[in-house]
Image (cartoon, rainbow, N blue to C red; front, side, top):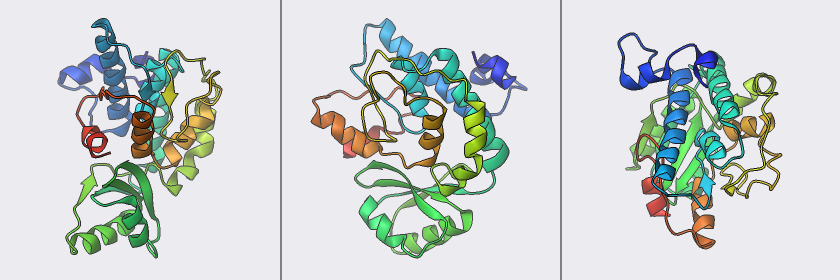
Amino acid sequence: MLEPLVGWSLLDVVRGVEGAASLERVDVVQPVLWAVMVSLAEVWRSAGVEPDAVVGHSQGEIAAAVVGGWLSLADGARVVALRSRVIGEVLAGGGGMLAVQASVEEVEVWLEGVAGVGVAAVNGPRSVVLSGTREGLEACATAWSSRGVWVKWVPVDYASHSEQVEGVRERILADLAGVVPLSGGVPMLSTMSGEWVGLEGGGLGAGYWVENLRRPVRFAEATRRLAGEGFGAFVEVSAHPVLVMGIEET
């Protein structure tokens, strides 16, 4: 599904074959992570583990939509491949992201008067990610770390979930115009809207995938809602345990 869209071999990248496309490139690492997430979900299913609901974080929503039956495998590949290409060609080099160990309420107060920086994701009660200009983020990192606040740079040079995404809105809409939402089989809770995806899946067209990249990720809110509605077992299906700590915190 991916190779005709990206021009490189997924298996060569995963196997670390000499000369394979570099995982340092956003237009490589995002499609590879998507493929790993979707494939691991099938491994769980082959062992008889079926999800009662799916939820995704940022680009993870593309995988969640495929696993839940809201997008076809082909359309999921199209969304992740073409959108990450735009990020690499236009947004890369123009910003960054910074993880902060503090509540979102604290962070929002600290951000008053800081230009070009905003909340990109809330992963847990004290797990926030910022996004924006490099200069603005550096100012935050310097000032906050001097006060004993834990901060860590996310190893990217683009500002997902920030106002910078507005510059690629029309291109993404054009690239993904042919994406056809499906009716779904497994309930999907959106970390973009905070709501369950509609019964007909009509909201997961091109416009959704622009907003998914533009708006903050409401992951902690989604975790609280799922727990409150009776979901008791959370399985992170990804290459690395990135979100487990946020889930446990919540």
